[in-house]
Length: 245
Image (cartoon, rainbow, N blue to C red; front, side, top):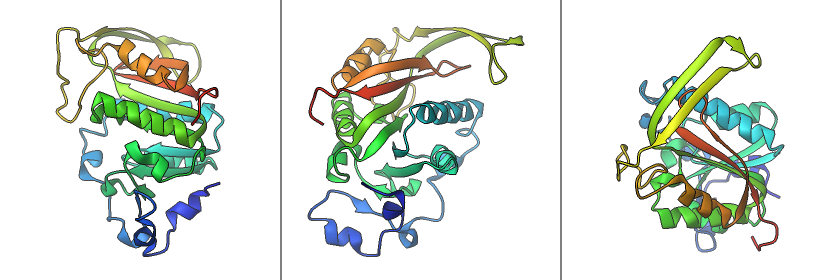
């Protein structure tokens, strides 16, 4: 069983000692950069929809009941900090040391960085679209290998949104009544963001393709769009227990 503190406080030189056995590098406090990669802290990045996304990520992970969580691509660290504040054990992993992860590793090689079934849940928010589609499939295989139960993922959903928020009446204290429709961008072949290799909703990449990719190793328990903007699609997944991790 991996304790969060074991990964966050690795002794100096431990990465060099284990490099031959594991294809990852642990990062201790002295080697972490002073701040996260600048991209994640610009005003344009931290807009209203981003904070709504953080809330949805936090809520979906908390609702799985997981106590030990692996977050792939922590970005600003907002979600992992909130989960830790709730008493959950969170390990962060990223190929970019600029995000100050607990472990520097490639999502396509998680099994080389962590023992099988190490976590109750594994999260990858806005990560998989940065990989080629075949590599995203490999990443999901690796996520299935290190989770005991759940995975929660999100990807951007390319398209146009018709949206109406009615704030005169609320279904509960947290959310207004939201009505919206997301039309896939079937007229486009390339993502709007140059860093993305693909996005569900594009002409050659319907959302059904991504669902089939998820279904190779997971059961889809829940699927929902980001409230308000409908620009991201979230999946709560249960690892298929009838297949080897």
